[in-house]
Image 1 (cartoon, helix red, strand yellow):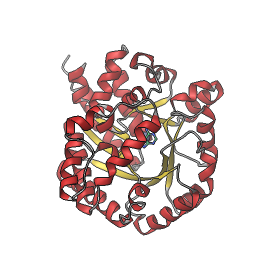
Image 2: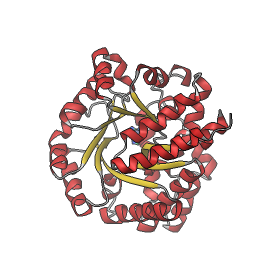
Image 3: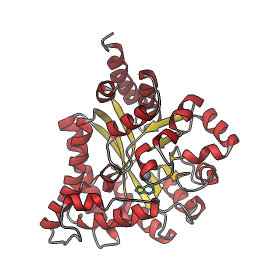
Length: 336
Ligand code: ADE
Ligand code: ZN
């Protein structure tokens, strides 16, 4: 199964670029930018990654991002992720970035977006990996800050396909950002939101109705509301599920208890993603392997995660067909 997973074409729809910052690159950037890190080595940083919930992770994650200063830093971060995509046979990726994590520290919005975007262009040109960029608002910050961020994004509309909502879900429900999302939608952005990760199923309902999202990020707590599950199936609303993240952040006690395979078999449009791979122990293949090790899944079911992600992606119908053909041709040419 491991060989099959390695070779299976994959599409990632839930990846925080700041969450792909490996400790080794963190040290390299810290040195380059004369910033001190409160750990003696990359291994010591990794050892500190013991989380008991989302907030305990976010505190460390925002601290890690402090080493990102220049456009080149954002380029290097994104390029390193794209090289991992190549290794894992990820053919298309839709990435989140959190501009407020950087603008709050005095880094220019343009510096962030230009660095990331220029690496994504090179990813398409040199590696053949297509991508889209999604701007996430930090939900623990206020509405005014989100509005100011949206304003900064307007000159970069050509580079950003959608807006999203991440950070601390508890205490910061979708309704807090309804007006910002209204404005973003009016400006032509698509929308997504983290919902039903740590928060209740009602956040999923509210993200759909108030924020008009095209996909739900995580969404695993939808099972607490049977009528909602029926609705998600009927509308084929995609859920971008992150198995290793969910076990690391104790959303589920173990991978065997994770509901992703059950959701797939119920007919939901679920996908597998890595969320913050540098913090949660793995990229796309690791997530697929962790699911396959804990649940008995068939090759067709694993491939269905890719087909679901293609359906759920923000590319044109022609581009979706191209991605489907790559995947189907891989399946058609499997040794019998
Ligand atoms: N930011 C980065 N990863 C996140 C997650 N899993 N949930 C909410 N915010 C995040
Ligand atoms: Zn996430």
